[in-house]
Amino acid sequence: MKAVKYLVMGALVLGMSAPVMAQDYLSAISEVSKALESDPSGLAGAKQAVKNYTKTFKKNPEAMVALGNTYIGVKNFEQAIACADLALKKDKNYADAYILKGDVEALKDDGGAAAMWYQQAMQHDPQNPHGYTRYASVYRKVDPKESERIFQELRKNVPNYPIDAELGHNYYESGEDAKAFDAFSKANINTIGEAYLGEYILSAFSTAKYDKGLEIAKAAINRFPKNGGFLRLAMFNAVEGKNINDGISFAEKLINNSDVEKRSNDFTYYARALMAGGQYEKAIEQFTKAFSMDNTTFSNLQSISDAYTQLGNIDKAEEYSIKYLDSNPNAKPSEYNKLAAVYVEKATQAGKLAKAQLEANKKADVSSFNAEKNTNWQKALGIYNKIVEKFPQLSDYANYQKGHNAFSLEMDDEALNYLLPLVSKLKAKSDLTDDDKYYLSNSCFDIGYIYWGGKEDLETAKPFFQDVLNYSEVESYKKIARQALGIEE
Picture (spheres, helix red, strand yellow):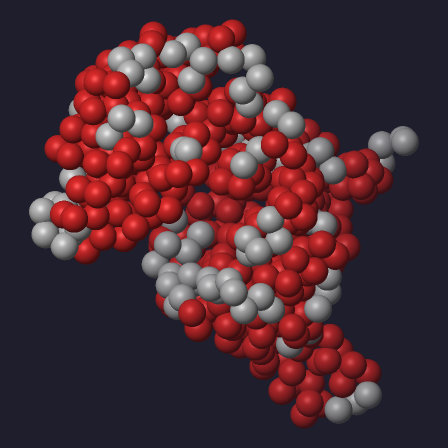
């Protein structure tokens, strides 16, 4: 076991014991705590404060455990044990003293010894819930079933204890988010503590229960309005759950909260919310802020490109897509395809302009736009070639994209140059995958359409339309294939 597993627990020890402290030593232990922070050994500056406290409260087991917890806070484990022994000298059944000993062993990374002391606490005081929860924490990873068993013992012996929230925390710490969510869901949300509420929301988020996560976050914000982290969790769930208005609202509250330290991801989520709401220019501004805070989050560059695409600014979309691909060594094939799509769109627009100029009898402009169309098409081909270079297993995909986009750009002969070899290759396979059937049927449709409509050669087109009927799942394609083949509807 690693000591880090127990650090948070150890930090909470004093706070968990505080409710049972008698008021007569609360102020005194506060002074001792301050003294020990500057003198953890208690042998120098804190010596007199410790001496006075011990002299006054040595017969009070609660006070001795409080002092022991203070020693734990400064990592003086020897003195913490001594305090536990003083408490047990006065009351051998005082469970919190055994828990104190267990906490020391846990922080020393001895899970077995810690469990033994927690077990002692349960035996001496079955009504003290902290022995159960600490014991379950030790067994959380090494024996989850034992951890669950002890929680059921706690439920039986202390029926009024908020066991479901503890179970949720236990599962959350174990990485079992689905079980954590289910356990938290059984608890009264108004009694779940601040830290556990955060875990409840995160377990909802990680299991894609975004609407519920947003609901819980809203309740947490109402109960703990000063905790800006709940604004962040509300934003996360709202954006992922496509709740646009709440996503923008909570993002703006978070960004405008001066008490919350902002992270790059906060601006990214804000930008995503704005994108979903069609506010593309504002989204670009926020994605830019996010990238300025963390220039290793390359996805923000691609998101800026996507926003420019939505605005119709294809040149800017191209610029940021190139920046993204040049920066990110782990870019996905789909992201390369996005840049290729930008070039195809630019080629398409240039082709439309060339047609318009031809109709207006402006030959010089026709030539210029056709040249622009060809330039962007060559750039698109370069991206498809790069996909093949980086991801050889996607060569059929890249060749299909080349042929299909050439067909869309009315470059029939070039389309055939890519589609015919692809069809021959796929038809030679003995066992076709679903992707193979998709590429084959769509390629055959494009080829058939070129021969039938563009080249007026129906006989050559027919075998390809027959393969459309054999392999395609697109009803509109099959309908046209039946028409070409003269098959009655």
